[in-house]
Length: 244
Ligand SMILES: Nc1ncnc2c1ncn2[C@@H]1O[C@H](COP(=O)(O)OP(=O)(O)OP(=O)(O)O)[C@@H](O)[C@H]1O
Image 1: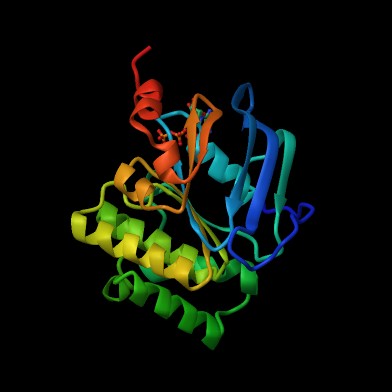
Image 2 (image 1 turned 90 degrees about the vertical axis):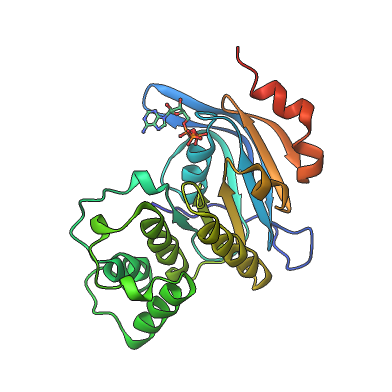
């Protein structure tokens, strides 16, 4: 679960940080993954996490989301709402007996509590998140009956329904057709312009190049951070994707 950490000095201006971590180690029982990571995530900007399969991108998102514990180091957030986390599509069981709308409504649980009936405000937030993702017509369909791309959009709508100013997404456009990918890329850009800090793990180098900042991971270590044009150089990319 999301835990409170001492805040980093906040500020609204360009260049302020939404969160910062230093000397961070994290992983799973018996499997250390992230080693000595130190970096910051700029506020009101799009940050891309890039790296080969197994380099630790999802683990880092899980740590930032508060669902994976650190084993050492520090993680500090600026003042703001708890992060909204959109996991990889494959990480969500497709046999859950839920409709698309019920899945998006789960995004309101933190705000209203699990057992309270949805308020008019909840229904309006859920409805507009579904509209924004173009899935209003799927509301009554079972999650397990949806295509991969439709399910992905339901999960992103659930993230939006949390109305957080820090949105974390794990490969939000993987497996989507070009139109859906463009729609989501445009939506994420709009969210940043509206005051959200977005962090996405991605294998899409085009999306990473259009981000404001980039963290490059290799084997659980941070091997680059900064503007994409400085981090995603041909040399850096060929070094980490080179077969051993
Ligand atoms: N639940 C888990 N239990 C144990 N080890 C795990 C678990 N999840 C991931 N790992 C391991 O942690 C390492 C990092 O995995 P992670 O999913 O963070 O990488 P990734 O960069 O997101 O990869 P991908 O691009 O394939 O999604 C891998 O070696 C993986 O096998």
